[in-house]
Image 1 (cartoon, rainbow, N blue to C red):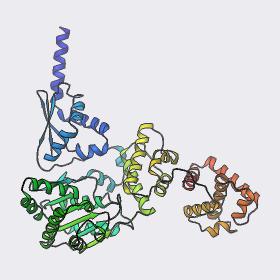
Image 2 (tube, helix red, strand yellow):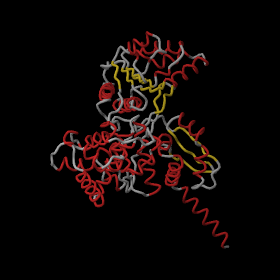
Image 3 (cartoon, helix red, strand yellow):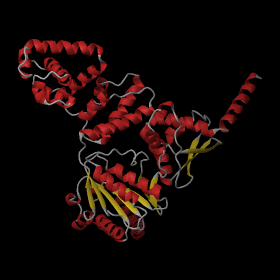
Image 4 (cartoon, rainbow, N blue to C red):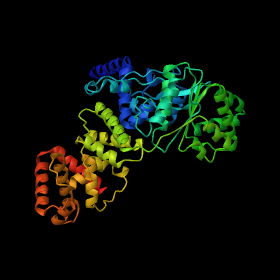
Length: 486
């Protein structure tokens, strides 16, 4: 009798669970996020919904055929494994397309996000709708919902490209864009792809009926080769020539005389018809040696905007924004400006490098619950930094670094001025000279404006005393030490 009751109770619980498949699927997605990571989850699972669970089959709905095929091929086993945690009797998963577009529901509010700025909360919750562009059965490359104009950080090195991209996107409803074609170029990781995605999202938001197609050069080549094999090249070209805005990424990889010729025809047809074309590459059109002269000339006939290497201010702004987002999403996480300054000084290659550093800081905090200090930051991003071997520190290096950090002229550090804003950096410089070099106290005094060795000794003891009570000063000096050693 007890066993029968237990079975009946189990069936009742299972029926009750199946009455609310949405809640169970939410738990499944949470486990998938933990297993696959935030990036994979945001790209492929955020819009997946559960329809029904019956007869051992979990029916999931997705936005596009591409997403359905991708999940079947790459994540079927992971989905079934995690789903069985909620539905133990499940034997298989079925993916079906519900409609071409989907709406992303805003995430539930948490206490940390309530403390964030209204603009940050808006940026984090208002994700664009389409997952992937396409036209008349031709599917474009995936669009990342995170890559919008709101999440793009503007600085001196990218403001021209950003302004041009925004102008083109906002002019999508007009008959003719002021910049056509728009050609954006720069090294890897500086924001070219971000701008192209942002333009696609903005055009779709302002004019939902617009035909927007975002393609990588590789995707264009693949589609054209498939059309040639299917003897459907003419239809392929006609599809491309009837869209409203075509965005091509990684143009430097477009190869093959036949493919280049067809792309050139498509380019001319779109521009002559008043349709917008945006192209991104790692160098200017005149330097794309693999392209023929006619295409280089046409690509250079519009606006050519270069994204230059990021300066310190832009790197710091990017780190500030990404760290603010991470702190808003992670209870208890704090990243001091000292840590951000250290990372901005040392990580100089790309925006992806900066974002990767913030992701690592957040993951370290979540896994260890240790506060984020410069020592922790240096340890977990060591492989991202150049010059892992410590170099020999000179007093000239110390004078230059201290002057830059505190905004004090080198001449003031060496002068006899006694202003507090000058005395403290001077004392810190002497302390660092004793700590990081083999110079004697008299020699350090001589290099710091012919001061007596007793003045140097007093400065060292003063800084040591202040460091014992002042956490911020300890962090500043730790930052200066790492900047000098790296």
